[in-house]
Amino acid sequence: MFKSHRPAEGDAWEGIVEGKTRGMLDGANMYHFVKIRRADDGQLVKVRIDRGLWKSIAVGDRIVKEPGRRPVKT
Image (cartoon, rainbow, N blue to C red; front, side, top):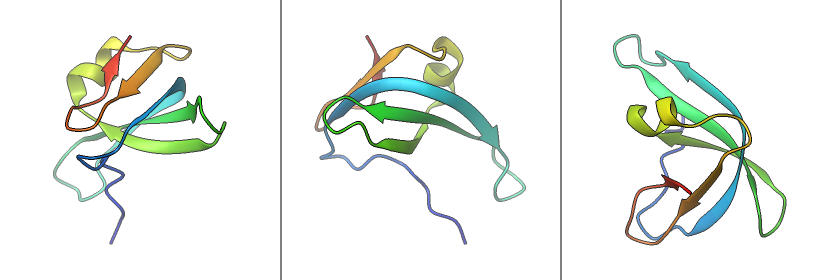
């Protein structure tokens, strides 16, 4: 079993994209991930995001996640 890395509805953070990956963890669905260096504490976290956002970002872009919303590129 794997951890989904999907941000929770109430999460709030912002950070810089350090890397992008994707994979078929269950053998049937493609999952898109980014490694984010959080601005508040400098911690590196792996977050699952939607395909559209994944395709639109590059390493070095800034992403913001507000409570009740999906992560967005800023």
